[in-house]
Image (tube, rainbow, N blue to C red; front, side, top):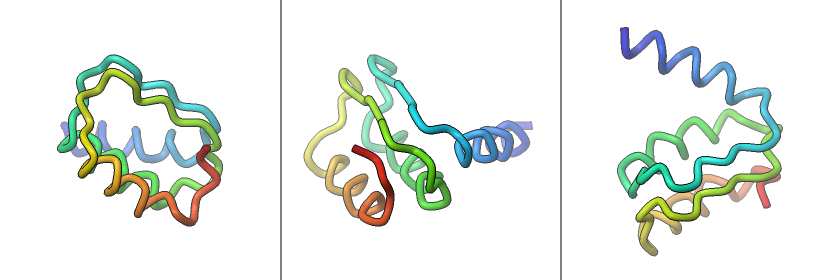
Length: 72
C-alpha cells in the first residue's frame, strides 16, 4: 500500500509548480526521498522547507539533485 501511495505522490509531483512543506519535521532522511522525486519533476519553481530540521548535509544533497531544475 505504501508503494502505491508513493507512486501516486510521484505522479502528482511531476506536474506541480509550488510545494510548501514547511514545519513538517522532514529531516535529512525524508529530504532524500523527496529529492529523488524532484529528479523527475521539471515544473517545480518554488520549494519551501523551513522548520524541517534539515542540516547542511541535507541541503547539499538537495542542491545537487536540483541543479538541473527550475526551483528557486
